[in-house]
Image (cartoon, rainbow over all chains, first blue to last red; front, side, top):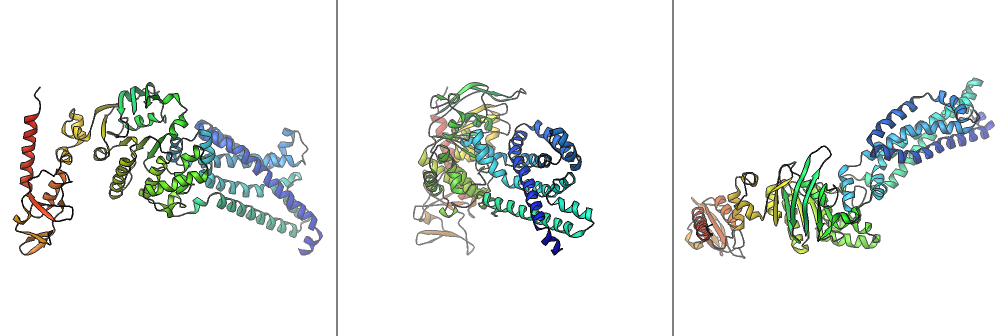
Length: 213
Length: 345
């Protein structure tokens, strides 16, 4: 095991960095898209139903099928990381739009009415009252999406770009356990680290959510 | 002054919430809107700050049509207090109160300075400044709600069931303190409540709404209690309205007998301590002063174990006694005099 790490140090590191990158980019893109979509879903309740149905279907598409289908749909090389990023963005988005919508809906109606009544314009009310109050529920959704994303990246290895997933395919091809074990340990570590980072961000953003009566 | 001129609110489904309302809320006074649920009192209130849009008619504040200004600008000049306070859970107490000055463009420091002054004014300790709303009791939260509404020193305030969710003791406290505050501030206030007692207590004027969104009677609390316009008002004001209307008569003119004439009254150094009945001393059951109302004097007489109310001066010295029967007699004479002097028409 240790000899494997020594001999393949650079390969493992590259896989790890690619994994981080492939996991983060879809999350960032999804956050940017999910915020306005979530807002619209709350404002127009018909859209909430539409989004729920649409993203429910998208989320249920098997990841492997999506990875294989996307290159021809997008017109890019099958080995291109864009495939993975687009696919993972779809999955993350499916989870996040719903989280954002639910988070915004969880904001107490009387608080919103009070905000309007004291003279907030709609835009400022969204940025300064709704969004901050929705943060805890939103970040809970983000934690789920992030962990799910980190495990999904590995599936990309089947089509050649999958970060740590590469260690799994390699292990199965060689019928050799160490790369698989290392891949699992690093994946789990990565998920834990990302989760902790989000929790720390949440603590910074919402000191008010921690106070108890 | 807030003026409603033929104001109607009709919803798309045909429901008429407010029906051709004409009403004037005098400057510097509290006008209480009271009525059964679904009578349109809250809708009427919310028309004033454009939380709900008028269908036809106009509302003006000091002669200026509310539709002529931007809705959020208008709202910043109107204090708003609601049931459960509706505080911002993500902001500290001081920043909650500082909200409107901040919206008006004040710096954080300036807004917090105003907020700190207001905390003191509404009876919140300075140590609460950095707490969050969730850490406060319902009564404390509503004090913050009142302070937030006052922060921009608006001439007009709208209060929608502000004290209804509080327990009776806290409610009474806040009602009294708010009355005191209002006597200093002299805001023009619309105050919605479903509780006729609260309306009578808080309102300089009371507008009784009936279902269908129109006003059954508008008048001072005394007028409503003594002279209900119709059956609906009489029923709404309640069965014991006769007793409640005693709140408006002073106990000053009650013909009390000398305190020493009550043989059973235990007096130590001039101060009444209780009633001696069969060798045991019983509690007084309260006292009244010249500043109290007939209602309080009557209540003291009823609560007394011997049916006698004790009147005291400012230092608590017993100055007179009167029985329940004598109070009733006095009342009857007073009513008779009123009937005789009333113009016949």
